[in-house]
Image (tube, rainbow, N blue to C red; front, side):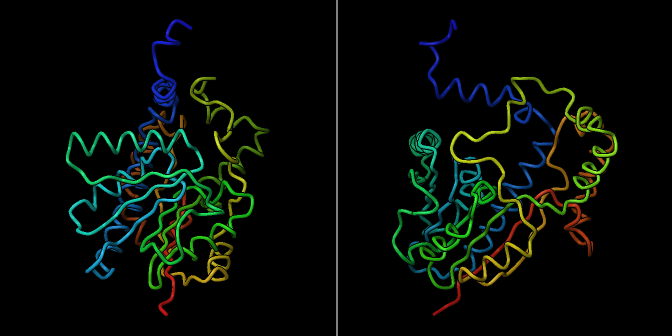
Amino acid sequence: MWYRGIVSKDLRKRWLEQERYFGRSWTHVYYLWKLRHLMLAATARRLLARLPTGGTRRVVDIGCGAGDNLFEIYDVCSDLPEVAWFGLDLNIRGVGLGASRSRFRVIERGMDPIHFLGGDALHLPFADACMDLIVSSEVLEHLPDPRPALVEMERILKPAGYVFITTPNPRNLPELVGYAINHVSGGAFKRRYWRGHDAMSAPPLTAEVGHAHVSVHRFQVWKRWLVESGFSVVAKVRGPVVFGGPFFDRHRWLSGVLIALDPLIDDLPLRFLLSSNLGILCRKPSR
């Protein structure tokens, strides 16, 4: 193509991501805002405020990709002193992009660096008991068996440190209703739901490194695995009401009502039936 040799591979990849549907969907933008700003960043800030000062506190995002979530967390917590930031991913190109962006922010904005590393969640390149806070968002469902990764997280976490993970919620009522309608309609509902996608905006569900969603489990399953790995489960955190998609973008009144009611749903007894993903906060016991 005409631009090959003119546009770098990394820039081309960025442009393609922006052309895809979920780079432009307003309902998915809401999902990302609540995930990154409220679930991840606000939680990290509260936890860092609880952790003792007097030494550098270390935070790592496992499965960080190019660092989109991690930069949001950093920005919300940037006024907190004595924090060192790390991002790790198996995708070397992703961590390279993150490292370049971090270097840009250091030079242009005078911000502290975020240290990006290539590595495997099943064999973390960190010493025992070296991290104060571990974040891993929408990552563990891509592992055929997430339990070894949980064991590794427990190994590198300091006693009394925290782990916060997010993962898809298979008990999300809108999705369950959608699946039921699609089954009854012989697939017609799914075709209508995703109408508006094309080969560019909706490529086949694959992962550049690793697997697609192969480990989507109920909260009770994650809780059992986390306890078996040595954590105590502290809290269950509700996610956004919608993930976003062409159907929700087209039906603006429906989406607008759902998004407007989303903060109120947080206080309802059955709120996790209206949550596209789950946040699970855990702590490693003190010695």
